Image (cartoon, rainbow, N blue to C red; front, side, top):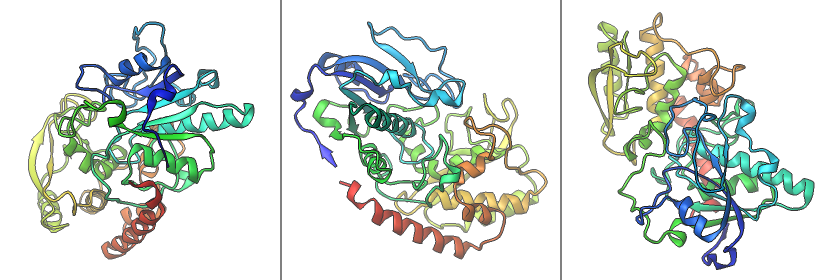
Length: 385
């Protein structure tokens, strides 16, 4: 992995940046404002949710307007799937493309997929013209650390919510994951990683959390997200429209004797690593808006031992058994894709899907996940530091 500790060599370069409000410093400035004092910053690439995380999931940013001098704004989350890939002309005549945006440690989270699409376009530009900008990653810590969970996403399931080969919880920093992409997919882009403190020595410390998107309000949300994001592919509310999305979840139909049995089954799963608080909640938007839902708040008590993905897979399997007439996996368009249901794009692995339909036991799943996680840990060793 290439590192850079002296920025003076890059001063004055023509640059573009992928960023949002999560890149913010003690000096009261967003990082892109600081870069405009160092580089000739030409373009801001907008990720999903917008520059200030104004928009909810799967909402086009085409209508967003910003005024930052003569900088061009290129929205990379529009109304069509083609909008996800930056136009080649937006990368031409640049010396530098800066990636300065927080990740939450899970492959579903789309910011680093957007960064990967930029990286891939730079690779194509380099192949076609022999010239391409440096891909500069301003690295920041993974908010949920180096622990990994899950299995590799198969290429046939690849989408905006998952790049092939990556686990559900990848255990890497943005610099590590993007360098992994560059090497693994033989993109041959000049990738340089810079620890965030080099550019921003007075950055916000790790205990201060700037929400990178509307439904990741706290760092605790990140610990449950690698599993609970699967609920987006079901008719359960994942807590959007509440103050604790992904930690709060449920549906109007979770009641009666089947709910009591569900409580018992969940209480015996991964004992001592989490606590479930029974509750009722009223989503103010998204699924079941204005309808009271029965459900839970998931409180992780031992983050280093709790396996979010396994918990959610187990939970969904129990719902299929206890609420067979009410529980459903959603159909229709999800993140621009209509050829596969959302649960398939999110799970990304036929083995996990078979488990959800009762074709594998708990012990089988545990062994499978342990093996896949061990292989991934070995594969990413060069990209950890």
